Amino acid sequence: MMIMRNWLSAALLGLTLMFTLAACGSGPLAAAGLTDAAVDPSVVRTVPEYRLGAADKVRVNVYGEEALTGEFIVGGSGRISMPLIGEVQAAGLTITEFQTEIAESLKKGYINEPRVSAEVLNYRPFYILGEVNKPGEYPYTNNLTVLNAVATAEGFTYRANTRQVYIKRADGTGEQAYPLTTATQVAPGDTIRIGERFF
Image (cartoon, rainbow, N blue to C red; front, side, top):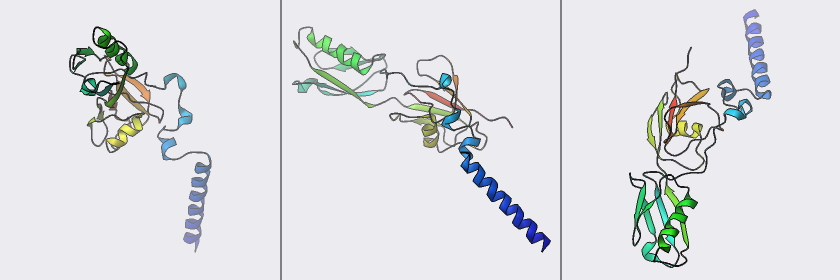
């Protein structure tokens, strides 16, 4: 009878503790340091306006000119090859700058007032390494965060450091550490590395 009473007391204590933690907003994510409340705004990573790069696929529309409208892939040289005007610089430009580049090329003896629009169809992939179950290359999607990227790679390994992530930009020279939170964004071409935690 004494053992039963002790077992019931322990069970009630456990339930009380669980509800208390829930009420305080704690839980597995909080324990792993993944709550938005813990984010320091000075180290939050945001992705600047996207700039085209090699392997991006773009669609260009030139109003009233079907022959100039189509889908193009940015080559290793950073340019696309279009009918009539030949090679046009794309890498390093925002989509607005890219549209202007095409329009300016068309004005040089081809079309007086060209109306050009462009959009990115497929971004260059991102890469994820380290303590994830399926490291590798994955297609980029808009508004991708590090946690989305980890989910794409089938989650963390049991050794993963779930508090910090290392990201190297496609045009960068080295990694930079960021808190691993729902606010940490990924850009096309990024290499993400999930480190090993220290016990």
